[in-house]
View (spheres, rainbow, N blue to C red):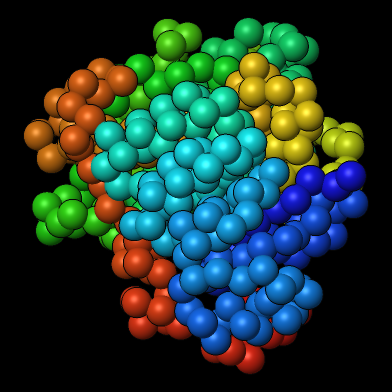
Length: 358
């Protein structure tokens, strides 16, 4: 029998989750919770779901799906994740940024662990099948020992888009960030609660011993580079490029990575993230660290972003991770934190009823 799925939050991103779960043969979308009643109605009609609820508590008091996808603005994620764990849901996922205050995210991770629920992340490029394959090749030693890594254009929304950089860096290097030293600009962005417009330069010290420079200014790459003696793997917000060997002038040579294609390419890395989630659900919570994206990954990304902000705010003081002060926070911009309805970019009913939410 297919696994039953409930989606909490059916805005633009929630509708993409609904489409993906509605397509996969091993899942069945059975319930939707959405605070906007008109959107709830039209999305329910669009996906043929009759079990419609105003919020997470109402849903979970009525039905306990095998899987709950929490796709809410950041302000509301914590309560929904913990409610799903307490209700006995076996697999819970959410998306970026997972929260703002580190202690809130700790509570989510702990609640899922105590309930024995698999806690997954969602729509991160870390889950792209080609990124996973490049990481596996680095981990296998095919390209030799990793000698260096760098992060490029780490600025503006470091808790949102920037968490993509951190998640990919951790995956490709197979290492954790253990220390952050950062410089922030402009001063007014550094002083505000959210990270909109904040530009970060600095360095990450990794558990492998490497020191990874972090650039905010324009460079030839916008993402993450990892290199060995003769190989460079470059993730630039797309399929990773691999350069191996050198030409007569000593310049790196691009090669064909020969990646295996994704099974459901129409859903991109959200599709591969969900498929990884389903595999781990079948294997058991003890395999949670094999998820392409986990709740732990989302927490580590937020923690590095928080450390970067506070290191810069304190005058580029090196901060060791994990951070001792779990009350530290970094808020995303209003659209990510409060959602489109509250931040002035609502989704129209017509768009919600269509097959291609923008």
